[in-house]
Image (tube, rainbow, N blue to C red; front, side):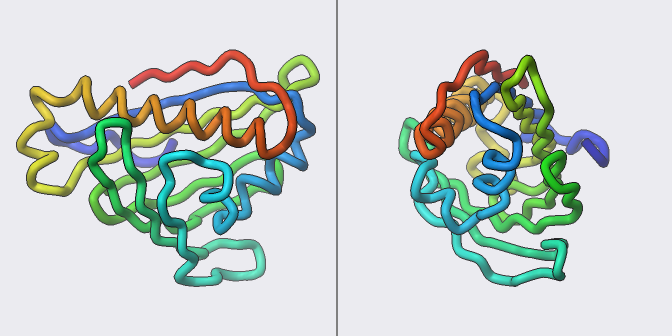
Length: 168
């Protein structure tokens, strides 16, 4: 993870990890293809590419809209800032959430390990205001969406998922 932790009561450091019984190239291909995420990630209502980026995908940008389990929406754009084929996707988020995140892929006993890390701050006034007391709700919403994504990706690839973990 690059950068420091966002400095406010509405700052969050999320980490989710899981493993898929799929080869790393297949997992990489699915994760690198942002426009298809909406097909397999429940809770992702919109993922619209807005900028192509360079030949390596750096600078690629997409706007997204996510709906958590209790119904509130979070909208933000994500821009690819670093890509290492089959190992790392790193990006910057701007919008209702602002910060940085990364996807790390690794080999784990013949499975592909996936670790997603986000250091973000909520920028919507109601979220900033409620963060000190609603933090557990926001954390649960994030963790729920990540587990839905892990299961959706496994289903999309036709493989098993194991060892889902989320921490904040």
